Length: 303
Image (cartoon, rainbow, N blue to C red; front, top):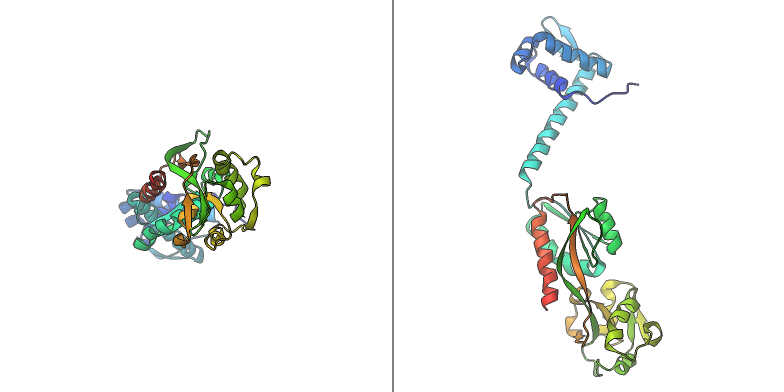
C-alpha cells in the first residue's frame, strides 16, 4: 500500500503531452523544457505511483496498465479544471441551486411564487428549508443555505440583515360570521381553532385588543386543534371557529372567499429580515430571488 501525496499537476501535464506526441524531444520542445527534464518528470511520477508508466520500444513507447489508468485520471482532471474555470467565469444567473430557509408560513407564501422562476429557467434548482429563526440562522452559518428570512435581529457580526417588511398577525373568522368580531364574547361563542403556535399568537394579538382577556390559555374556548399549517384555516372556513395566524399563512389559503381578516385597533406584526453572510458573495442567480422576496414581503407591509 502506498500513501500517495497529491500528484504534481506539472508532472501530469508533462505526462499527458508525452502521450500525445509519443516522443520525449517533441514533448520537451512544446513545453519549453529539456529532454532530461521530461524524463525526470516521468521518473518522479513513477516513483510516486510505485509502478512504471511506459514500456520503451525502440525510439517509441507503449503505456503500461498503470500508465493508461494515470492518463485517464489526468485527462479527467483537466476537463474538471476547465469546467470549473468556465463556471467561475460565467456565473449564469439562470443556472444552479438557490438555497433558502424560512418559517413554514413564509414558505407557504413564497415557494409557489419563487418556483415560477425555475419554471422559466429549468437550470435553476430551488431548495427551501422550513425552520424556526434559530435553526434558519444556524443553517446559514453552516453554509447549508445562502439566504434566510427571520423575524429577529441577530447579534452575529458575520451576518448582514436587511429589513424587507413586516408580517402582521391576523385574526381570521369565517366569511359568514354574524357576530361582532370586536366583542370577545362573540368570538368565544364561535370558539378558537388552536395549533402549535396558536396560544402564542393569540396572546400577542388578542391581549392588547381585548382587555377582558387575563390569560389566553384559560380564557380561550377551544373548538378544534390541528398541527398541519396548510390545514389550520379549513375548520375556520367551514364555520367551526376563529384563529390567529401570520398573514403569509392566511394569504396562502385557497378558499379565500370562505374566510375574512378582522381589522383590530391594535395591530401586531413581526419585522422580516433577509439575512446572508456578510463576507460571502452570492452567485448572480440570487439577485432575482433576493429582489422578489423583498418585493413580496414589502407587499404585506403596504396592504
